[in-house]
Amino acid sequence: MSQQRPGGQSGQPGAVPALPDLPEATVARLPEYLRALHNLAESGNDTVSSEGLAAAAGVNSAKLRKDLSHLGSYGTRGVGYDVALLIEQIEYVLGLTQRRAVALVGVGNLGHALAGYAGFATRGFRIAALFDADPSRVGELINGLVVRHIEDLTETAAAESIAIGVIATPAAAAQSVADQLVAAGVTSILNFAPCVLSVPEGVDVRKVDLAIELQILSFHEHRKASLTSLPATGSGAGKLRPEERSDEGGARRLPGAFSERSERSQHGPAGGLTALPGGLSATGTEEAVGT
Amino acid sequence: MSQQRPGGQSGQPGAVPALPDLPEATVARLPEYLRALHNLAESGNDTVSSEGLAAAAGVNSAKLRKDLSHLGSYGTRGVGYDVALLIEQIEYVLGLTQRRAVALVGVGNLGHALAGYAGFATRGFRIAALFDADPSRVGELINGLVVRHIEDLTETAAAESIAIGVIATPAAAAQSVADQLVAAGVTSILNFAPCVLSVPEGVDVRKVDLAIELQILSFHEHRKASLTSLPATGSGAGKLRPEERSDEGGARRLPGAFSERSERSQHGPAGGLTALPGGLSATGTEEAVGT
DNA sequence: AAGTGTGAATAATTTCACAGCG
DNA sequence: CGCTGTGAAATTATTCACACTT
Image (cartoon, rainbow over all chains, first blue to last red; front, side, top):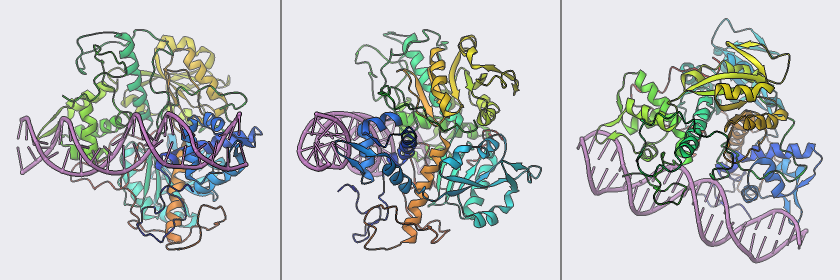
């Protein structure tokens, strides 16, 4: 049963993939489920329904069940999912049974914060090395790790079996750092610099850009404001024209007045989640980056 | 022409929306285009083709054209897009014609880094206030701003017209902070704490979770490793079983050996982008969070 | 020619709704 | 009965390919 896509990418009929190739959207949500499950486990729950887990993870239950079904799923009808078993399964699928070594490049403002991030350790990773190009920073001790010069990257990457590189440099340096990471054999990169990286096939890059997140929020603010301040401007404003210099002041404070889709994609807005039933508080015990 | 969805959410036939309601996926990409456009403008280009802009933004040109067509689009056939005009349009749509005020709650490790983030200012936002719950931190001066106690939030939010709240507290405090932000009239929240926030309808929440990003990368690492280390294990390994205690050592270093889809969703991997044609370097001038 | 804008085709994702198991 | 697992439907997103404009 399950296993919707038997053959994977390779058309070869005989080969069975060692791992199911999950839809990307599902992969992106598994970590969220995992966190919720850990919270539940800590609260003493040893079983949970799709409804309960979905609420704790901020998705709807149909989506959750579909996602879990892709892993072959380990629920019991009429009962729910065994929390410990599901944790084990998801951690396995995500490759978290081994603690992966992370190299952080760029120990500026953000780099410092990341180097001190406790969530690294608690969620399956180990910061193994810090690098910077600035000689005046090399040698500095951060959180028990010494900052090395970027030129030592290749050597260190091999010695520490670096699996993931995190780029926290200015944009101007990011591509060069990425090239060096790739040359050192790193095939997964998390990029905090606001620029597009070009990497060879087989290398995964994920990007986090604070300003982009804010700009997306800004769009929705703009949208909400334009909907409320001109409630029924029947004519005019045919299209979008920068002339509308409104201050968007209109009415503040009216939650419940709109009816956008109540759930959003990816890391997007988690608005409109049905309030949690009872003891399943969504508030966890882990800390934010930094504390 | 264009304007695929004339009526917007409201079924009312007479009402014309002040803003087109763009697909979420498009909204999420507009900031990336905007950044690329600013880079192009700085490099002296005053016009760009969809091909060129797409390359600079890390997407393919068909997607870019479709995205831009949703805004009514301002290109010239046979020529391309006017860079300055497109910048103006996108900034308008994203609501960046006004500099929005941001309140940052939690000035720990990460909060400090965010408070010093230059991209805030350069990309349309103004950090207007810092808050923390820890009395020993209140009064501290960060980047020219004094840290206030969280209790002053409502008052300050009104005085400074805070549009967006950024939560950089431990997870345990995040829900409470979100409640206070909402109570103060803030309808957009960027959450760095690893937990799901429950907010009333009409409030947008976006989440950034470093550990989740790493775990997604971990999945792909795991996947790549299992594909290469057992190249043709015809039988066995029928499903996913945590027994496989392999070290995934196998073969390191083989870019170009796999053939995943060469482009990825949302903020996901930007792998496989065709190398930029000529002068359009994707490397910008902006800095990463922190520097 | 060169390159946008867009219908139509395809693919991915989400949601529905319910059969069937414990 | 309650709740999972899942086909089928609905929705959303991406890609193709080309008519059409400058």
